[in-house]
Image 1 (cartoon, helix red, strand yellow):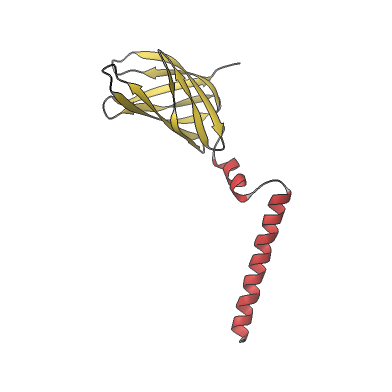
Image 2: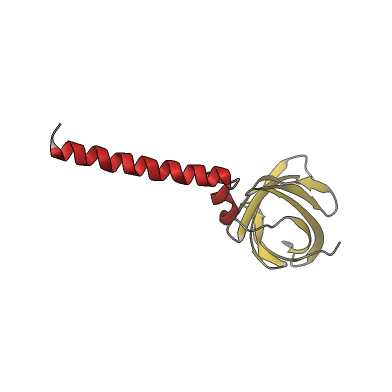
Length: 144
């Protein structure tokens, strides 16, 4: 083995030991690298939110948004005139998004996309579809 090959092997061995040491340290503290990453990747947007949505006709409507969060995945319900489950919910940093399917009144299902930002106990963003356009919403975390 040449000196160059020996240096490369020694360097690789040191990196493996350092990587293994980090893995052992993380496992001893109860964290894995993905779990550690997930903790810092998204804020906790879970809870019950009192939300006011702008409507296409220029009026507004109050709805209740209940979000449950596991790591950075969101599930939950929007309650207004009906209860509608959310789908494909995600949180990233202080932003979140999800979709919902609603009956448009003619028996057709319309996909609605929501995108928002959380700032403490307040949320704001947009909701809508290609058919109705993009509309605003604001909300505050409900007590209790």
